[in-house]
Structure formats: structure tokens, C-alpha cells
Amino acid sequence: MYSIKISDNTTVKKAKGIGKIITQKELHHEKYLECLSKRKPFSNTMHAIRSDHHHLGLYEQTKQSLSPLDTKRYILDDGIRTLPFGHYGCGAAGTICNSSLTNDLLGAGDTK
Image (tube, rainbow, N blue to C red; front, side, top):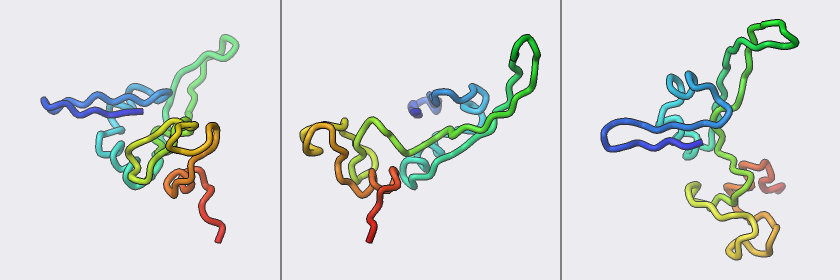
């Protein structure tokens, strides 16, 4: 997922697996920023006509459209910069770095 604001007041928004209408009408640049800054995920409900064994049906599906969690990269404490898992700045290769932000997002916070 990403959102880029261009100087001529246009916005390029992408969200994988989310319908085009939802991306255009409901996901605004401010929601992307809120998702990252406040670590708040967003969900949306989509409707689609699908065929299942030659029978048409109207299906409703709820998906998480925006999520602050990136499972392939280590999120630094500023919440913006990332490092790939296994990077020398994270410690030993293959280990998850110890960051309060990453631990909060993964649900592995302090057990005190």
C-alpha cells in the first residue's frame, strides 16, 4: 500500500487486494498517514458479483485495507524508516530486531 501526493493536487493511491472503488472513494492520503502515525489499521467492506459453479451470487467481503504492520521489514522507532530483516543494523541475520514499534505491531510487547 502506498499513497503519493503530487504537486498538482493529484494523488496516486495503491492498496493490493482492495477494490478500485474503495481505493478511489474511501482511502484518502490522510488515512494512509493516520495509519502510519497512529498505528491504526482500517477495514473496508466490498461487494462483488461472482460465479461459483456457474451460479451467480452477490458476495460481501470485509478486508483490512490499510495496516501499519510490515512483516518483511523491521520498522525503526520513528515509524517511517525500515530495514530488511537480517540487516547488519538489526543484529544477527534472521532475527527480529528489538524495537518497541515492531514489538507493539506484532503483539510482542513487554511482559512486565
